[in-house]
Length: 119
Image (tube, rainbow, N blue to C red):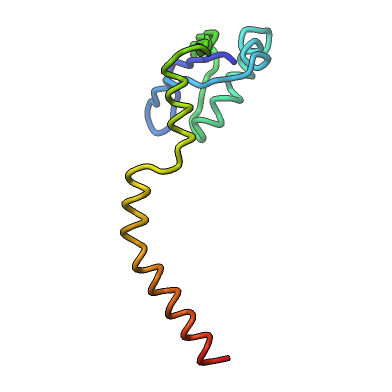
């Protein structure tokens, strides 16, 4: 994946400033540097700025490689996160359970009474 930044101006009832950063796959990003780069710029910018008249030769294009950070695997912090995600009982879940338990109980009783009377 590559990060592409378009900068320039277009025209739609006055000047429209184009300053857009998007992520593109390598093939499309490399086509922005190829022989038909103006056609590719125009196609991409027409999707992001509909109705704006754009002269692709007046639009600058900057292509950067996106660097992915490596996630450490033997970190104690990651182990703590994994252990806490396995614990399904948290204080908030216990409080919510205790808060809504009377309503659940009342619903079950009403449901049982309703089914017995009308069956």
